[in-house]
Each structure stands twice: as structure tokens, then as C-alpha cells.
Image (tube, rainbow, N blue to C red):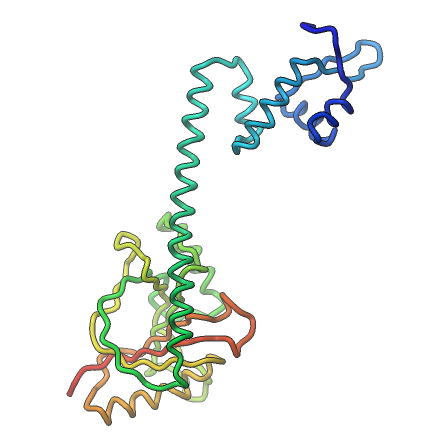
Length: 274
């Protein structure tokens, strides 16, 4: 031993305010090896172990795994230290990039929810002139609602592209022609996600520029079936004809709340002048 003064595991635990189980774990993974009394087999620690423990705590606080710490303390040298710190900085940069991406989507989503809630006008029909909107199409045919997340994960696995559902709006193109007239819901032609914050490289689908009739409602999704005929009637009375299929934008639905009365849904119908 470099120093005759030794400490028991309980003293080390108390000094660093950590449990003895953690100290034993550090021993098991090979980053803190105590001395053993040859007769009693008790663990003993020296001031060198205090230095090692301080290093372990610092590296854990910086986000290093115990495996990386084990690699670092084995044959420790300056080049290894520089390499490890550089690698961790790169990992942190990637985490910051992901956090910035998530923050951007969350802010856009929150702004969108607040904006749409402010725009709610007792289900009045509005005429909107909209530019092209970039979207991420995850399925181009009808799928059950309970499989949307399944196909979203499948899409992310196939494209190696992360799509966070908290920060975006799930959307559905309605298939009126092939819908069951006795059902409370329309069949859908596809499922896609929309956010103002999507970058061009992320997207594989675009909603065209043009005039859209819009109606915003609160409550159960069954109301889409009740309200959509009024939009076609409005179009006829205002010299418009449909210019595509209606689209359902779910700003607030089961992703955000379990209370159906809090749902906030927009129906958009693309139209053109007669």
C-alpha cells in the first residue's frame, strides 16, 4: 500500500454519501478494486481509492457509463483521456441536436394548439388560402386507428428517421366514396403527420397550395361525419367545387388527452372557383 491509513467500506460510503451496494457494484464492474485482508477477507480502502472514487463520481456526473470508466481507468494515459473526452463531447453535441429538434417541435406544437384553440369559432366555416405544406406520410392506405403508432414506428425503422408524436399533428385524408354509409366514421385513404417545423429533407408528402374550406370543432370524432356535408353545401352556395378529398387534422386527440370533449379537430376541404 502507498499509505498505511486504511478505511472500511462503511467509512467510504459515509464520506461520499453513497450506499455500500454502489461501492460493491463499482468493484464488480472493475472500476474500484479494494484491498482484501488475507485472514478476514474484509475490504479495505486507502487514500488512493478516495482519489479513484472522486474520479468515478465526476465521470458519472458527466454522463459516462461504468464501462467507459472501466476502459478509461485501465492503463490510463493522456491520449486515452483526450480521446474519451472528445468522444463524450461528440455524444453531447448529438444529444443537444436531438434536444433542439425536440424543443423546436414541442414549441411549434404548443403554438399550434394555442392558435387553433384561439381560432375556435363555434364550428363556423372559414375560407383559407394556404401555401404548400410539407408532411410525413406513414401509410398511403386505410389502417385501423389502433395501428397508427405501429406503422409510425415501422416507418421510422425503415427510414432511420425519428418522428416525435408529441410535437406534430396526425392527419387523415377521408375516403368518402368507399366509406360505409351506416358507420359513424369515414374510411381514410392515408395517414400522415404535419408540423410547421418539418424540414424539407424529412418530408415525403406535400399538401398543395390552394383554397381550403375549414371548420374547427371540439368533441368526438363522430362530428366529422355530421359537419362535412355542411361544408359541401357551403361550397355550392359560394361558387366553389371540391378540388380533392377532405382532410382531418387532429390537433388535440388521444395523443394529448383522454377526455373526448377536449378533442380539437379541423376538417379542411380543398376547393376551387367554378
